[in-house]
Image 1 (cartoon, rainbow, N blue to C red):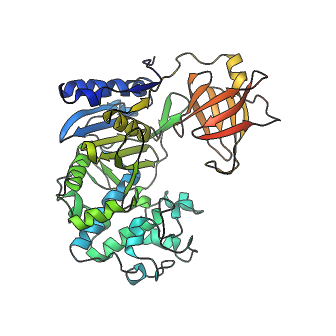
Image 2: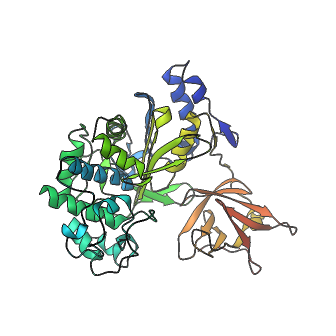
Image 3: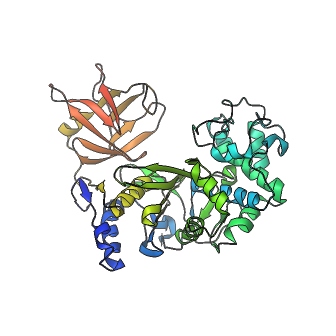
Length: 456
């Protein structure tokens, strides 16, 4: 069912680039992707470009399962939070044109914003405004059910207390900050946000297959979004009004259009040098994050996106002059793992293969690991207890308050939470049953009252 490979590999791409044809690099990348594709997990398009030349450009899976329409390299995907790059670029174009100042207080442009007399446009872009975040507020799900505008999204947070004072280090992805930026862009241009981004970014760069979804009809090549169903299946994603994500998640694009943006931006052919440096210097804002990971060995810029039915990852490695673009029409958040693995491989580093067990666990193996595991205060959900349980379609991780995440099996001690695409493992105690669950970098201990359980 799934191509087997060693647990940790050093891909040969970094070695072959100077001596082999691009087709060889394509084959190496395809071999890495094969387990994701053959296991039914990856559906989308990928583009890997180095020095302006495509090392890999391909698509897998279905753009529309009901019509049996395959994804193609020109399939259009919602890109979720990658949208913030285009919002930030539009704002910085207005700065370059003298129509907007980063140091202007947002209250001077839009009335009634919490702490509007203190927050600057710069702090919105840096994601350290500490505005109340719409995505975390009661009633947000209702916003997704009807058409919104930048004004209605800002109205949703008016008269709500801020999370804190503006400034300092970015603490979270600030969705409402980018809703507000969309409204500011409308006020400064006299255009709809959709048209402003088209004129300032998409049209100048020839990104003819990109746009802002304001709930108007989009071209027929738009992929339909899916969510995970059990360990291998997919189901239709819930339908939303993408206008409710204006500014922070409402853009759509293709891998080739994204390449046009990355080439122009990092090549210095778009925005002033001062604006480009401002966007990249902050480290976690302006639609970008940056880090230096040991297995890559060089700083990178990246952005991840996740929204109903879609996931995305965009990476630029300056030292390697390399772009990695992954657009996916499933909400299974694989693209960050895949993108960072490919970046490491291209740098001559290591990555961990996706190695899935074809046969299901037997009853003894299931009994061995099921139970409840208590984590500490530094866990994703502080002091949470995760339950590893047996369900009709296999193991599930039961998170407090949801979800019940389907589990992929590497072997009887190593697994992947499919919903969050996070590897975890169990370690045995003297009684022969698992006593510890290591989820990512966190360790949880099996509770004393833990007994085998069945998911319903």
